[in-house]
Image 1 (cartoon, rainbow, N blue to C red):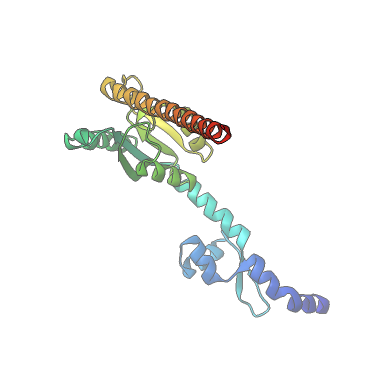
Image 2 (cartoon, rainbow, N blue to C red; image 1 turned 135 degrees about the vertical axis):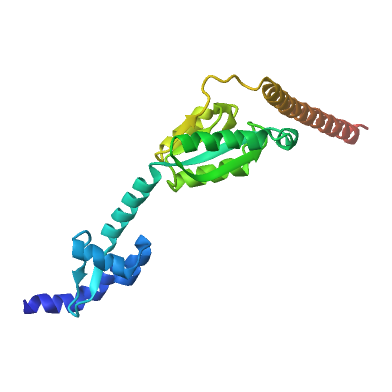
Length: 230
């Protein structure tokens, strides 16, 4: 027993710093009061160890496990709503608000808690949508178990399966409110025009670069010929 005390006094501070925390730090980690932790101890839910001076110390690994379990339990009925329209004209006409209203009603019927209602006014081809990026950030931190959209193409026009795979990796599923709805033909035409315009611009740039390179090369040939002529 004496050897244990010697070892404990020598190594105890190191162990406390690396593996254990005080009741105050434990309460902050779990988002609760010190009295709440004392109550858990009386109920046998979380038993701390005691130092030689009878202070409580909580194992960090145990607190992390409790935190993760709390997040999983609290996120099981939580969802993120995501609505999108492609133009300001649609937004001004109230299309975005109505879309978000339908999503809110749908979530309420399922008795889901809405973590965030995110919106974007942008093409489904736009990768820099702030609402979509916020959605991915919340999913990464496991703040919800589902993303609810009215139509699948609200998330993205192409490659939606990649987004779904990413979300599934964090335990978040995509729920489409209206599976049978047809695509918005007007928006689809706009997206096709955007794709065509983008590729046309790339082709023009490529051709322009080739023309410039050919012109420079010919100028160098001409200069070389002039320099070698008698």
